[in-house]
Length: 437
Image (tube, rainbow, N blue to C red):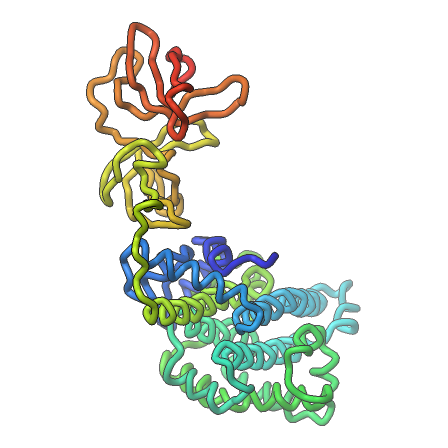
């Protein structure tokens, strides 16, 4: 079964080479991009909704819409994923050519790999065509270069805009120079269309391109790029970006490029998947807007007394925690409690979750946790073992080899009477201090 849009967004990295490159480009060609990698946070950012129940309804509806094969969302993401995977091979070929130029005894590589300018030009025009197709598919339109350029000029924002800014920086200016448009013209106006149609990147996206023949499809690719030339030229003029300013901003991420701009560009193509990363965010935004519109058109559900909403009280045995409250959070890998602060509260699948920031750690380690792994730090004066009645603890079960959440109900000398959260009172028992933490 395909991943849901929630899983795709939540699996996006908060910080890797792709994110670093996108952030660097966002600084030199600002697009107000936020690397949102949590679906519920994206719902709040896109819709302004803050009610956990309403956010949960939008999330569930978005998942259903995304998995509906009659909708365009899965196909759009496949486009972004396909072009990024194929781009890796293209970058490898370009690097092979550059190595052949620089190392004499590997000069044979020049004879078996196309010239890097040609490769990079094909890479650029095909990425533009894929972006046009993705936009039209997402908006349920027939491929239409004019409508695409209109949207690019007036409506592109956030992930979509930073994707196009990255395209100009990484795939146009860096490898091809400020005269990249002239080099593209040489490619697209060539009488030999096989230069494009026999390229592996073209073959990878061939099934998505409109046209009855390879020549028709190559014509569509050329037409797509011609449509965006004015926007690209205007973007470069408006931002004042040059190959050198881009290289200076990105150079810290690239080692071994020897200061060569085309090599940096090929390395970035190999090391990043910015089309897929931002493409997932773009599709997620579209799904959220569609789901929000449907939820808004429906009456608010009436809570059933027979099926009360689950809370941290029912799942963890403790009262709800507030944003800003300092708590202890259980780490199952380290088998220890860590001090943390509640950042956000959300409702997911009818259960509450808490987003926490661990004291002394970077925000990259912030995480969503289950209420059963959270306990209050305000539990009175502990005894010599560090425990007190009413405190939530973890109890080790030797037979199951597993930790269970429990609450201390009584204490005497070196024994503690615990109630296991989610279990009946018949399972309550006395345990020693060595069995709890």
